[in-house]
Amino acid sequence: MGVVQRFGKYVRTTGPGLNFKLPSGIEKVTKVKVRHIFKDEFGFRTIRAGIRTQYAASKAYLSESLMLTGDLNVAVVPWIVQWRIKDPYKFLFKVRNVRGTLRDLAEATMRLVVGDRSINEVISKRQEIASQAQKLLQKELDEADTGISVRTIEMKKTNVPEPVQPSFNEVNQAIQEKEKMIYQALGEYNKRIPQAKGNAEKTIKAAEGYALDRVNRAKGDAARFDEIYQEYAKAKDVTRRRLYLETIRDVFPKLGKKYIVDEEQKNFLPLLNLGQAEGGEK
Image (tube, rainbow, N blue to C red):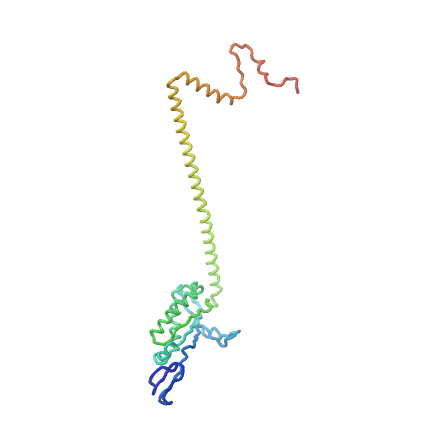
């Protein structure tokens, strides 16, 4: 698009195609690339892009990416802002140094977002941080009337400064081992507790069944005793005799060998050899 100025004052904005303007010195046209996607890099610079991209020395731009996290750790956070011009008039006339303003607002926004996160979140949740930073940056740019639309914010590999990387890795390893032990303990807990509850429930059910069986048997025995007693009350001699015979019938087979001797028998010793093999047989 073309922005036309007449004697330095903004007059109109023209679109693509055939347009007319007054001769040079009266009107001036400034072409603005509204479809072009611009890119600003923070914490690093690309010297030559290609299959083997070359970057400038990281230490030269380290100050842009060094940030303090919410848990008071220092992180190295490089990122890229891709943007385009959505309003040529605002982009040219509302802000004196629009490119510098963009970089300052982008850096301030990223530091604000990173400052609300822990170091682990900054490393592991880059997409979430980039999305939040893009929304905040666009809001700040609109309030500043820059005429810029932020297309994307891409966060590069985030890490801690090189001098503290070994210690940071050891801390991360310890945290991972701690979480592993917690998960193992929870797994064992989830395995043992239901099993113990099942065994307890089984024991309770077995005890309840045993108690019910004993109670029913006791009630049955009591009812049987009542019935026998009623019959006994009706005919005591007959019932007593029947009970005696039934008891003998149940007990007598359990006594083993039995010898029935006539009370008038004087000598019963020879009878003790009955049923045994003869002494001469071997």
